[in-house]
Image 1 (cartoon, rainbow, N blue to C red):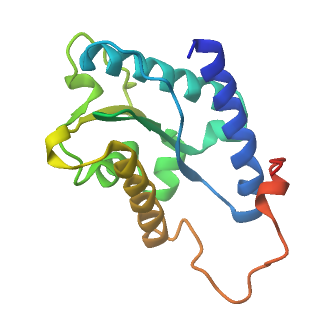
Image 2: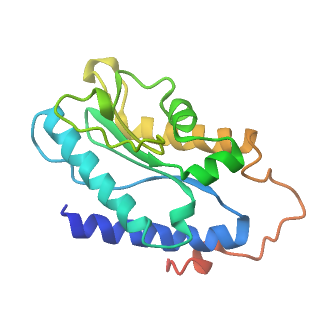
Image 3: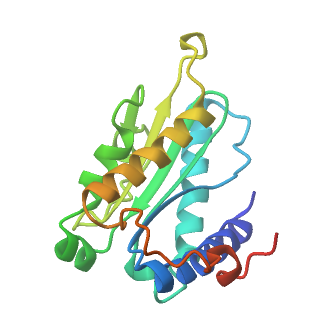
Length: 189
């Protein structure tokens, strides 16, 4: 996957979540991105995959609304889960959910988590106000843990956390069941 494809993917994700923001008041999202992780050493592939996820973030931030949301993009291969997230400082102040707190919730229970700053030969991608963060979780294949399943677990942790923080409305009977958010986002199925 090249830089341009990653940026396009980010633009696509921002458009999709833009409609959800309009309908649900979404301020944070966490999503799985399909990226072909390069066949190199796990250290080199993690660095390159973080670069790809950074490009997806760049694409998402081209959408003026998405620029103001908290975003976490995650991907995996057979041996690792890699994530890259951003929470704008203004949103963190408003909601009391900063990138470090969100990251800690999402990576809780993941094995061998290294933040971007701890990965050898990677420059720190975090800004001075710590609104960007990346992580790499390496999974031992003998441990019967599956990275794609861990990605699903991260998404569930995200939903549970945002519900606890009242950032996602709890299900109720008075919801508008007639709204199809996929169609609203322009997704054909």
